[in-house]
Image (cartoon, rainbow over all chains, first blue to last red; front, side, top):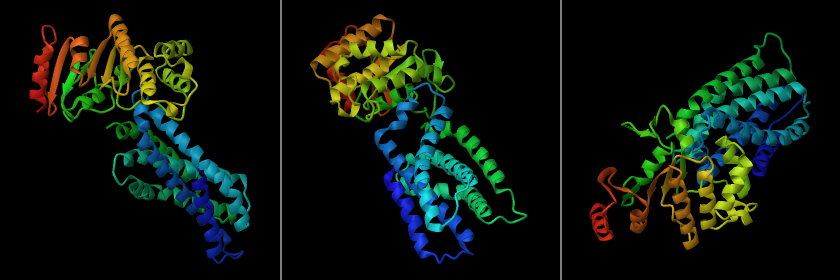
Length: 196
Length: 202
């Protein structure tokens, strides 16, 4: 976990030094930086968890038990959420410091919903990719296209929070809808994915 | 029942299908009168599996592992059942040690305890002697005898023909995923069995 925290912070710091930040363009740039770092760290974390589980045959231990596969999926999702959440909790204050942006409570809601969307898809596809040889390469390739709606929503919602404008779509509402849809589909399909 | 065959014959695959870890690609399978596809959760409650892997969490202690799995199987009086089995497999002195720190034979004992937590009707054993010393093998013999005396069934794979003759009443031999020999052990002697096994395995 420390390694993923370092990746997240390194990403944030590099972009902070690389980008030509001025007061008038911070709201346009900072949300993207935040979510680049979070997505990068999330996928790396999911990939490492996947590799460790594969080595230890962790899934078989649970599959032997008469436990509903949806419950296994939700437990894994919760574990991944906690894992990513800890990295984000550490990274957020540093991000706020480097980019000189506030941390309103609404941002925490956006981060939570966005992380849920990424973790939902990532958990499902990490199990799918586990059965392949190029699993750590395949996971980001599978996940990225599907989390595009979530990424767009969280970046725009974060942007809207920093620099409110009129006539913007309800990004948080869209994010909640995506999360509900992805979570429902993942729970229903997990049992078919996890069993050989 | 003993399941014999050369490496790659399909013995482990059959056990993993019966344990619910793999779905069969064709055909029908019935375990204790239950269909392997439609009644798989009920089958998992009736089956105990001891395989090549321990199916234990190495980061957790013996006690933590067994308490976790006894809850997965919703066994009543969980703590009592766990302590009963820990004593039965001779691991009471190591109950607070991490599984990752145990020897192969000790892990196998805990794996046995795990498989017996929910008092399964059917025990699936994939080369159950692996990693066990003489004392451990005698423990397995005792556990199997108790299980059978309580009305349970056992399907095991092994390369030890002596165990086959001592503990099974039927032998099935596999060759390339197919049954090539299926006989009762009554009246079968070691030399005949060995000769048949060599023919099948070659």
